[in-house]
Image 1 (cartoon, each protein chain N blue to C red):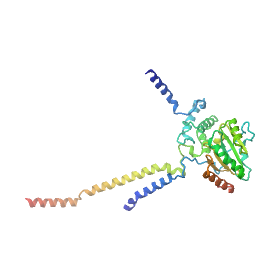
Image 2 (image 1 turned 60 degrees about the vertical axis):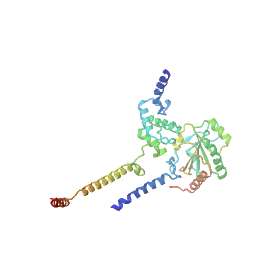
Image 3 (image 1 turned 90 degrees about the vertical axis):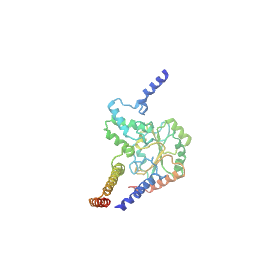
Image 4 (image 1 turned 30 degrees about the vertical axis):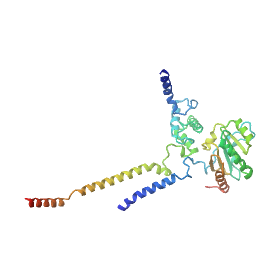
Length: 187
Length: 158
């Protein structure tokens, strides 16, 4: 009994030490919001095309039916990181043949049109989410966000923030490669 | 002087409006529904500025969620249904009061466990102290011996 009591301070120090080790881990992002969509079916939404842009609108139906996983990118012309991400997305489409869909989040149609004319359009379809309701359906907290959706409409991955920089692009490429090998069930 | 008091009066008058981000165009005509919306909004976390509820957040998404909460209420949802609607999209993370379930047992039970542990330690320590006090007193046998010795010493002197 005496011995057990004597070991108690060390035990307490170990418990707290382990807690601090976990809490101070630089890889842990306490602001990260786990997405409830992962492994769930993509939310139901139906967005019209951007006014004055010759790209069809986007609904949930458009995401399904493809053998390969597709990307859904939430973007806006007023979002500065989206501009940097645009080049990365364009490269993914042109070089890797990824199918990319866009949700234009709370953007003025004329601004979105100018943005696309200026930078080019890598999106197969773009839905105009003027009031941000589709954004809520997808559970986004800001723009840009990019989702990987399997051919059967299951959301496999969510990337918050711009996929820019070697580290981010590698992380995303790994997730995409994993998504390609996904055959139903849990990834 | 007059100006200062006037400025103070204006600032004080504006005080009730500073704490809330709810804009006039969001407020529902039905005061009962609006009151419920305010209560629900206070339990929902803003996903952008994460330690604020959506009722006091100026973030765009927070405003959208406030409008959504009001829309659901007008559509006839109960408070629980509205919260479930938001939770289904953003997860438990949006609830400022996390639910009690296996994943959060540590969170909810840790304070009680730590309190019991502390109280238990305190009781054990206090008990040991009392035992030591008792031990510091002489037993009846010792008292008798001391009395005997003292008696003989006194006898020697006289």
